[in-house]
Amino acid sequence: MTIRCRRFFGTAGVTGQEVNDHVPALIAAGAAVWRSAPSGGIEVAVVHRPGLDDWSLPKGKAHSGETLPAAAVREVAEETGHTVTLGVRLGSRRYRISDGEKVAHYWAARPTGGSFHPSKEVDELRWLPVARASELLSYQRDRTLLASLDGATAATATVLLVRHAEAGARETWAGDDDLRPLTAEGHRQAQGLRALLPLFGAARVYCAPPLRCRQSVEDLAADLGVPIITEPRLSEVGYRADPAAGRQRLIEIAAGPGGPAVVCSQGGVIPDLVSHLAHSAGLTLLDVPKRKGSYWGLFFGSRPSAPPVLLAADYYDDALG
Image 1 (spheres, one colour):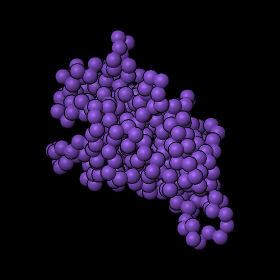
Image 2: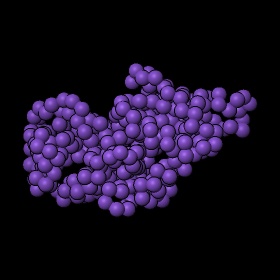
Image 3: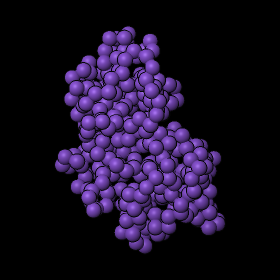
Image 4: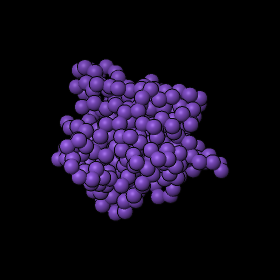
């Protein structure tokens, strides 16, 4: 199993980081779980593990066949008692352990419910301001992750930009191309998206008109109990006719109420759309992958009396298997 992710922060100048880790035998996932503090600012959850007598960010080993985002959400729940919504990916840390090597992948995450109960694995949880949390943490690798949390917490809106799942070759389809359906593999990828996108708080669903776009997200929309809103300007035909209108429509969706939005589009739209958003925000993208069944996590920050601006972009192809 691999994860490919490109992360670009623009809150402190133009910076960029690319992560393309081939996962070793032992992998782990977790999160810097944060919430607004009553007195202002933010506070972060740190946990004490009595077996190691250390303080760390919640994380744990991924199960066989489990995606890393799913492992992060599950491990946070097991160690803190809290359900969470994932946000910006903070990166990975590789380090030696007694029987080999481990790579731990981390996200910024916000709690959505639950409460802590001590266990044999974790006997204490503390919510602390970032500076105090950094002082308490036992490992430099965790402190380094916290140092990048400020950019992630500035994100106020999320768009999960999906390329539709596998639909077979256009050349072998005799009918209207908008009616070209998903293949069996495409339906499998759609089920992967159905499981993954809610981990990032998916709450609204939009798609370009082609049937393959709708089929890629229709089960997700049914699970969420929301309608699928058709977006002609985010299809290849509509975007090609007026790219500026398509970009504006995505910004409108990002700024809209109701929580993170899923937008299912096409391969002829996504590279230009993501590249333009990044360029407008002063960010540098090395490339914009667009494999069928993959998605971009686009995280925006709000500005007074202005459209939201892209702060970070993460690419995922977990649903491809």
